[in-house]
Length: 120
Image 1 (cartoon, one colour):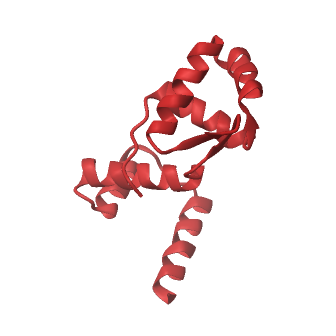
Image 2: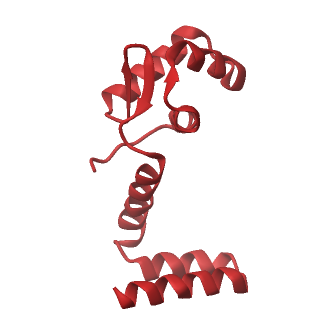
């Protein structure tokens, strides 16, 4: 997947689309007016930019995603680890856990994930 960078407000907009897709563009305008306090031209400008980036599409007045939320955030997480921790997941986990203690439930869940990956 190609790297797509979004400003915070664009990410909020994409989250609205992901939560409501497929959605008529007119309905999207109403939601953005209510949730983001945007006027119609602002909604269409941001929509056009996200379509140009290849994240969304507006086909016959119906807006939907070309990249699902999970794939977008997975790629974003991978990029953060690559940029900030030289691609080292252990370095990221060490930095993360140095400031936030993991609960027993979180540790168990991570251990289950590691075990599953080892078995593959």
